[in-house]
Length: 134
Image 1 (cartoon, rainbow, N blue to C red):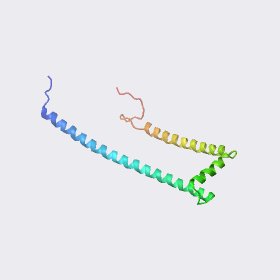
Image 2: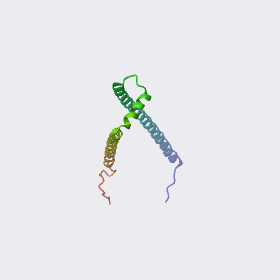
Image 3: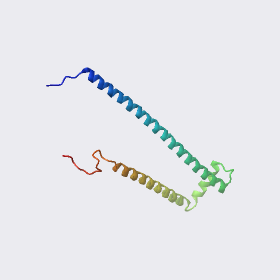
Image 4: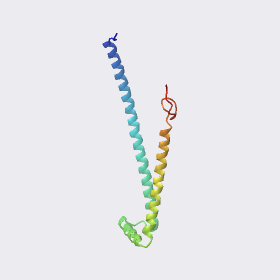
């Protein structure tokens, strides 16, 4: 015999679902806010790091070429230096070294993340066991 659905029961169940939905949306909103704050903190730290690097490089330029050097003057000096035999090649080799080191750093980060993802526990409690329940 088919069970009759009680409208009152269904409305109560719907109300529970609506409440769960509101709670979930509230939790999601908190997570999104935390995520945005973290993204902003990361961006601020990256800006600080970049600014620090620019100051260090600028300090070295001033140390070797004097503090009254303009950007245009420094560019002209670099243009002359890069025309000298071996200078451009040396700069390219150094740039390639840094690029390769950065690629390696990113690959290490990626492999660490992949390892973390592969060690998550499956709902069955087994780690990739391939075990099939009967």
